[in-house]
Length: 395
Image 1 (tube, rainbow, N blue to C red):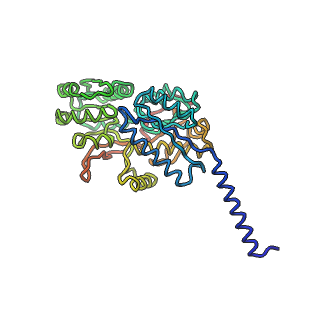
Image 2: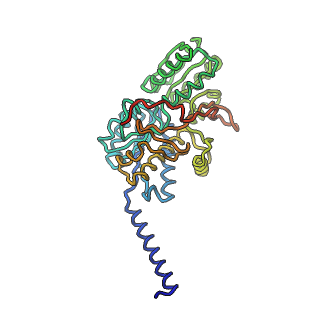
Image 3: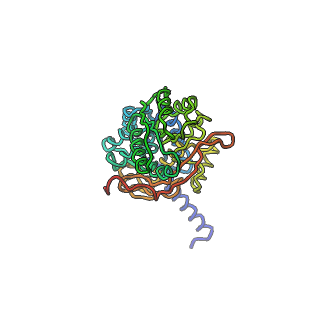
């Protein structure tokens, strides 16, 4: 019979052996390979910079905790050049290299381009900022998931809010591309049901730097409010010129995907008082968001922006899929997430099986000066119960 001392030695040896085997197993597991396709150059570069920062932070954080499902996380970056064709080239290069869990494009036109190639590339794609509902409707793909609120979700919320404002005459200034026109169409339909009048519709090309002619028409339109759905650096140019020409003195400015931190930081008092939807806020009172904000603040000495919060949430969805699937294969990850409820910085959130839309709360905010700095401040919250039914039936 073994002595107590001998038995302890045997048990310790066995424990060490098991630990070593576990370490070897973890080391031999296939890594999680993230393909980050986002805007390093072009119109969307300010947002692309925030996306990069958040995803790299999440990868570093995961690896410091031992990886995801015992797997190291690797990430490679490709510049989409703020164009759909640039996004296609970058995504294809990444996917062909094995980095086929894709994330990062800003514009809906880029996301729509990626969607049609996922099967060919053997990739899955996680949308974090694109809003067009074509992504969860006519262009839906089983390997694509939208982790941010889309147009229908934003408009359901903003319709509720618009009912309570006094302004009846509304003008529209939107980007002349798919998402901008979709946003304008949604507003027109909602305004008609509320008895509000659309006084003027204007569409500016992406990359436009001179908004003076548009602002002149808005000032002369008789509108009491203007719905602005522009993109990237165009929003900054508009905000500065609208302030110069006194537009805010004549009408309320309501932004769809407008009051981002990068816009407010670049325009300061020119954005003061502007209303709009807010996709993420550091003030969201969940335990996981508080942990995220605290860790981010330690790293960067500031709170995360809206784009950074949404990008971080997006890559966490990928990590949840890998854990649930026990695999990094795009098809397996997609199957594991379809219809699943996952833990997020917003709280538990379901990913609808019908269209792979993550069902999230949404927020109305206004730019205010807080502690000497202008920032988007959440003024009203709307839970996921107001989200419209999916545009497509069960797969």
